[in-house]
Length: 245
Ligand code: 13P
Image (cartoon, rainbow, N blue to C red; front, side, top):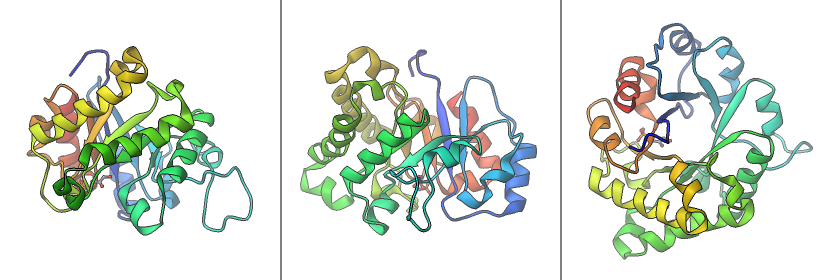
């Protein structure tokens, strides 16, 4: 990993956890310096993270400022609770809530405009990988966002490569598979601005756990992780954070 990029480990709790888990993370998560840590709990728990020693992220936000959007919340509303990062374009949002590349691009722009850090998720299904369209597919996901946000999105923008076939399956991309894609993502960013691309963090997500984290994080272009299941266990999450440091 290049020294110019501080590793970032983000826990995406998805729709899991309870107030007891919140308490244990606030009181017990001990962090090595040199790693940025973000916990993204369900939105209803965010206000309970006061005085946490790590950053708080949201799992989604609306592209709109305010208005008749039942069930939604704006970036500014989240920011007012101390949220600094927002996971955007997660494959579960794309699949379950019909979020297209264009919607994800609008959300990423609104996030940056609010002065917050987007964690933009991209990643292919097994079908896409097997069809040989992997790189064209990922390029489409990246281009939509960069066309809307411009190169000034970098290096704040964090990209999380999460192959759908590795999410929650226990099947992890091999370090070589992940590095190949991360290098591709960075080369795409470099075509727009090489210096900014070298400072932009690219995370891996998809069944990263306490056992496989070090090998993945040792790859040149893997700057941290976006962790689902293993972020619900404080010991496992701590091990992953320490492996990133
Ligand atoms: P798992 O770590 O449970 O595979 O989930 C990854 C993920 O989707 C994080 O956003």
